[in-house]
Length: 371
Image (cartoon, rainbow, N blue to C red; front, side, top):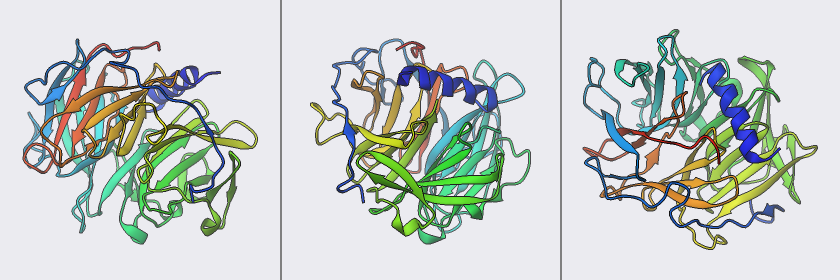
């Protein structure tokens, strides 16, 4: 089964349930940069400063320090990783981390109706620090990851505050970045934002309960991937960032070497390869790799931390193209780009855009369902 089919399977399951890299052997797939890509060239910047393909529009849904329209909730500063969850009203709830430090981080959420109107907003996690990325679970919760050095923890949050957030110490204390859940293999994969960071796997004692389990680190040799419970013996990856799971595959990014990795979790042993490397790409349009998300078509979307402030698409055939660009915000980074459950809206933030503390956008349009 190709990546397009894998991603379609993973996206469908998600919608139902929630909506030292040196000397590592790997198989490098040649990546070509498509001029304009499948969506065509970017148009002139719109009123919100976004350059989008024809047929797409944007709106601002939240500004840091200001109340979310129609609610009494003040949107948090430094918006980072996020996810969308289907809500009981037929709409969805967007969850967003805050990367503020010194206990001022956490996460908030906005609930939308089926037509996109804002129905409510609230805080779902408080008192934590540098909540960077995270990941959605198949049982409908958000794992908020602290990029807080050796003190960094993972907090399990409920998108609409159905219950109070809970710290999950069993997932380890380190400079967390992102999490991706494999519901078939019953494991949570965790990236570490460090120059010699590890790729970790947490296998809960009981799937759906993150209280106890086994934490392991990946060991890579000649393109094969195995696991060890001695974390220090794990292979090093240069600055682990975003992670995404779909249909038996795990994708994650490393900012220190601008790579996008793919792990085949179903092969025995597991295999790992690089699908994008800005040092070898014929036209390296993607730099400053960070958060990553997949669409139902099998396309991967990678947000840039810096670079040209672009959201870049990697198609199932390996083609790389710029999907959008935010202008006049060179000191910022793009974060948290999940799709809503229907797949026709994309939420993303400019972490230091707007008033300098962050702004969150929605992009709507004819996202393809077939690649």
